[in-house]
Length: 470
Ligand code: 6PG
Image 1 (cartoon, protein in one colour):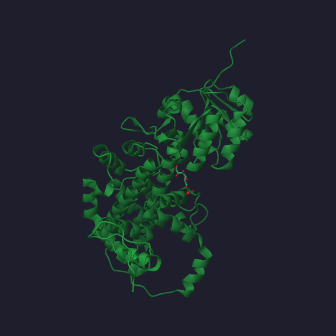
Image 2 (cartoon, rainbow, N blue to C red):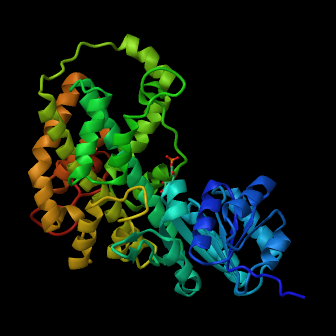
Image 3 (cartoon, rainbow, N blue to C red):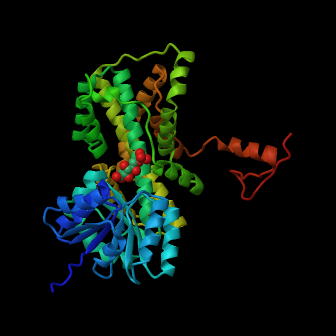
């Protein structure tokens, strides 16, 4: 009797992401098994594996029994309750020392809870951020694992093999203890929201002040992507303007409703940054704008009531394209700076032990926010691992000083034309506030003491003071 085939790696959830990730594992020479409640998905895995050792099933017992011990089981299922349900199901079949890996966009608080829960059961657990969408999962994502180093070492070889590579270096590294992986992924998404909103605002300005048509917009973003703004998001932005509408005439972009949805990771970043007292205003602006975008009905009604006469500044297209490009560069730097500053603080608060250089390194490829800028960010942390904020790194300070006039200019143009530039404005205000050695919040402190005896500190004497305000 032939020995039953045992598989190296298992996946629960064979939707596009799970199946693609698993096929990527199979491409790298590991045998794989997949579990899904949907028979079609399980079958699709075997078909798409094209002869490589892959088994798909709808039976959890069969699935777990088919894996080599200690078992390595990854979950790519919707974040939230489903993860807990799958874990409880698996617990009936797995053994001590087996490893469960959650690869979804799970809330880090849930990951901390699951780590505790599984520790008691002697089952290893990793909370892993995976970025890159369906294509990334298939051909090389950026992977952000957190939990215990011991558990990570069990899958290090596999994750390194499937991850994206930049200059031969894998876009995966152990991020840190506990929920570090999910936290890093959450902040990645916060930065993603900020960059997307900045791109939307840049599009608004180029289209509605500069009068650029879709072909000109395509050319502008293509040009940006050849320079210092080179990044995945700029690249896809350029290509979006060339997509024809297959359901009618004209270009698709002009038929898409201006309502952006969200699954929550950007909002979590803002909420958590508020909890830690770390400012991330460009990310906050992006979350806010998604909210305003979804108030479509109200906006349409208000557009009639609040109609205004505004002024569009006259500017040559080439000049505007240049200004907007520099403003984007400035604002992207501030968005990364905010996200990185939040990670530095979270690492202390939550004792993650994050390595900022490694984080920048694994974001250089595979993920949605990949950009050439990340190599400079990596360098900045490599020369100073205690950098309080990216904006004060020598190279970045030079970039910001060299482009601040452009962001000021496009914000002014936006204000005059009545075009909202919340994210651009937040980026600039963040920069201006951070470099201001004397903000006007002495007044805030005086008010607090005035109405609530909350006391204040002085510039000329040590200690805490209270005044009986007249
Ligand atoms: C990624 C993406 C991915 C997903 C976002 C979308 O890194 O691959 O960030 O995780 O596409 O979660 O988020 P919203 O639905 O909130 O825009």
